[in-house]
Length: 69
Image 1 (cartoon, helix red, strand yellow):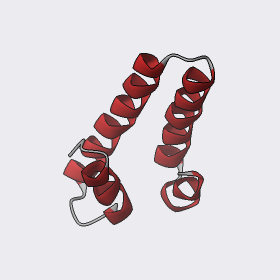
Image 2 (cartoon, rainbow, N blue to C red):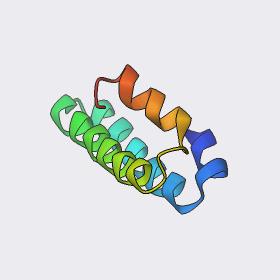
Image 3 (spheres, rainbow, N blue to C red):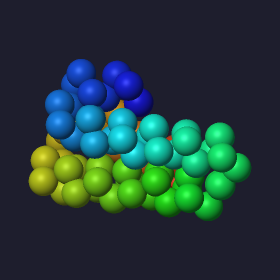
């Protein structure tokens, strides 16, 4: 998801925060918190996609692949 920052600016930075916190939760053995961070990222992407449905193709694919669409 690091590539997202270059493409999506502040949205990408927020998503990196979610991703980094997820990774931290995984290292600490807290899979429930890790999934919560990914769910938060999914909600963020859904809002962005709703505003500009033709954009964020990679995010739309990520939502589908992770079962969050």
